Image (cartoon, rainbow, N blue to C red; front, side):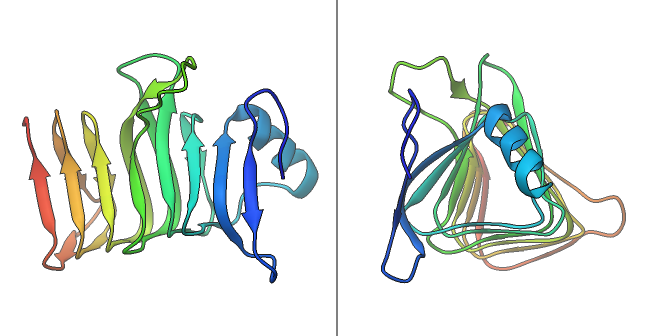
Length: 173
């Protein structure tokens, strides 16, 4: 699938599964999805696929599974990009982080904010160029969770359960 001035590409294998490419997840695309199929109930990002999310508040009513790359972006520095889902699973091949584009576009990296109503599981890498916010009642981290130049904030609306032998780091706060 290709098209548009900022060409979006998805490479499919013989079975129809995505194996590569990039998608700009912005308000125009989200409106088109909402108008054709309704809200996003679940989202799976396949290994080799990069999603650049410039929606300031992406709401997924079900499960977010990331085996690829999800990068948060904004049109102005210092902004936060929030991704909310019932369950967030970032696999060992998955990366969630701030956009560091070099294409000369108007987008810059946004702070990462993840909200999981039920649980967040990380076996890959979750990072933010500045502040990183995670809200979930259950967090299992066997990967890397890092705020590179800011604070790492973890919260829950109730009891908080944190498990796993992964790395947590806030390099500047």
